[in-house]
Image 1 (cartoon, rainbow, N blue to C red):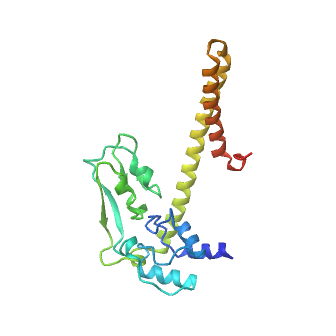
Image 2 (image 1 turned 90 degrees about the vertical axis):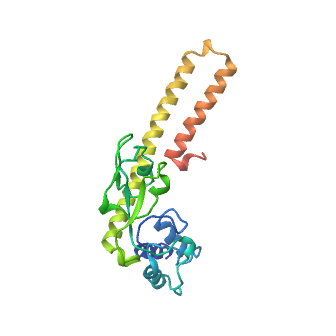
Image 3 (image 1 turned 135 degrees about the horizontal axis):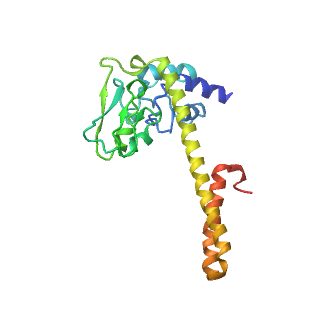
Amino acid sequence: MILSLVDALDAVLPQTQCTRCGYPDCRSYAAAIAGGEADINRCPPGGAEGIQRLSAVAGRPVLPLDLDRGAEGPRGLAVIDEAWCIGCTLCIKACPVDCIVGASKVMHTVVDAQCTGCELCVPACPVDCIAMVPVTPGRSGWQAWSESLAVEARDRYAFHQLRVQREQQENDERLAAKAQSKLENLDEHSHHTDPDILERKRQVIEAALARAKARRDPESAGK
């Protein structure tokens, strides 16, 4: 019952994944509304129409937008000043829909059609070379957005999460392999090492291996 309500609420959110509602993504905000933990007026990108949509689904009265979360306004587009970009990749990591392309020490650029205007890349930039430019003057909220853009943003966010999870798993596996190699190396040269030092090193390496295993398989962490 609650799950279907979460789905319905998530379906009427704009999927900008901006976190201004106080939750890490639109789905988490939908779950908080369904669980009675959050009001329906915490989404500036959705604006007044978004609140009406949430009201209709949740069966709650319409509320004015919570301005502590931000004001409704035109949809913004992130624009990177190429002359100042240092290629640090922090904006790429901050983007929830992978719409910024580039590489380390190489100038980055935004794929305009995929930018949700979430603004998360702006504070991530250490040289303040990213500005949000309004691209829908006179139109805000759902008037500046569309169902098709929301669907695409949701799909891109899902892909982003899978990519991040895969990269984390691959990194954990590389580190675990190195730790295992060091552990085996310790055993091979144990007769040259002080036993106390050897044991401390072994404990550190085994703890690192246990953390990596816990991240790969959380259910086995407590076993």
